[in-house]
Length: 152
Image (cartoon, rainbow, N blue to C red; front, top):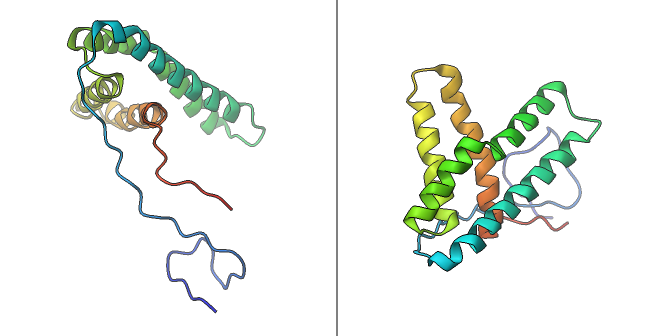
């Protein structure tokens, strides 16, 4: 018999298969220069990743088990993914600096999140985490980053 120590999801004794979560690997954001010819390709990668996240949110929204609060959060997340002001600023930064899309996205997300956190407005400061959550999912797709996979 193997005894596994850790944080349980429920009290009591469990009999069955155990899944031990591995240490999460740190996500590394590469920074590299791109050529002007790569701009359209990189931007399309971002567009595809945003579309994939939009679909994931739509799938969650179509669930009957979703609460009103969860629905509102996911709908807000969808709006963030298509915010024309943010996307325009990102595109301008990306096109002028000629840095890969992962780095450019991470830079602009951090910039926006820091601006909200420093706004001295509690509500806006809380939105910083929302922006990071939404666009970190996009970054995960761009980087093909999977902190761990569960195969049961």
